[in-house]
Length: 145
Length: 145
DNA sequence: TATTGTTATACTCTATAACTATA
DNA sequence: TATAGTTATAGAGTATAACAATA
Image (tube, rainbow over all chains, first blue to last red):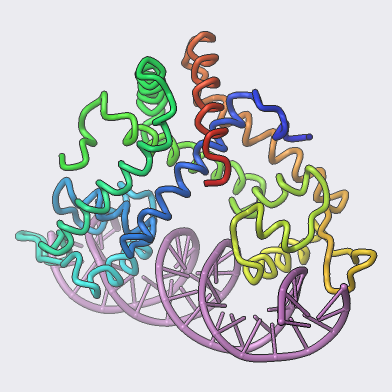
C-alpha cells in the first residue's frame, strides 16, 4: 500500500516501472529462446548497424571496457562475432558480426520485436499511435540518460 | 539499419524496448544512489506491502527459491530484513522488513518514483493521462507474463 | 510423498585496479 | 603522457541439482 501497487489506476511513474519490467522480461525470455542472454542480444543488435571498436561498444552499451572484454570473449568463443584489426591503430580491435552472428542477430531481433508487439496488440490503432508518439517524446528527451 | 534504430519515429515495439531500458537504467541508478541493487530495491518494494515467505517472494519476483536464499542472506546481513518463524509450519520462514528496512524502502521508493516522474515531465497533462491509460491496459492484460 | 528452504556448484554480468602495448 | 584493451579479482544475481527437515 505504501507503493500504491494495488490501485488499478496507479500513478504514471509506477506504471512505467511495471511496463519496463514486463518489456524487459519478454526481451530476456525471447533472447533466451534464441540461446542468448539479454546482454548478448543487445550487443548483437548494436553490431547489426556495423562494426564497432571495444571502446565504442563500451560507450554505447554503457559498461566499462573490462566488462566488454568478457562479453566479447564469450560471444566470440561461440562464433557469433570476431575481432579484426584496425588499420592505423595497433592497439585497437574492431568487432564485427560473423555470417552466423548476422543470421542470429536478425532472427533474434525479429523474435523480440514480434513478442513485444504482442504486448500492445490489445490497444486500438489510435491508442498505439498515441503511445508511440509519447514513447518517442520521452526517449528523445532523455537519450542515453 | 536492420533494426530501424535510426528512424526517429521507429515502430512501437522498438520504442518500447528503448523506453524499458531507459526506465530500467533510471531505476538501477536511483537504487544505487540509495546503496541498493535493482534486485534489492524490488525486494524491499514487495516487502513494503507486508511480510512474505521465501516461496512467495520467489514466486512474486520470478526467481528460483535458491536465488531467494542468497538475495535474502545478503540483505538480512545488512539489517534491512529479518527471517521470522511461521506458526504452524516449522519448515517455512516469513521475511519482513526491519524498521531500518522500512525507512530504506520508503525513501528509495520515493527517489525512484521521483526520478521516473522526471522522464515524463516534458509531456502535457493530457498526454500523461493517455500514456497512463495505455500503460495500465498493457500491464493489466499481461500480468506477470 | 510433497513441500519448504538451504547448500553446492557453475556461469554471466559488472566494477575497480593494475597492467601492456601503442599512440 | 594519454589511449585501447586485457588481466586479475571480487561480488551480485541467477540456474540446476542434491539435500534436510517437516508436512
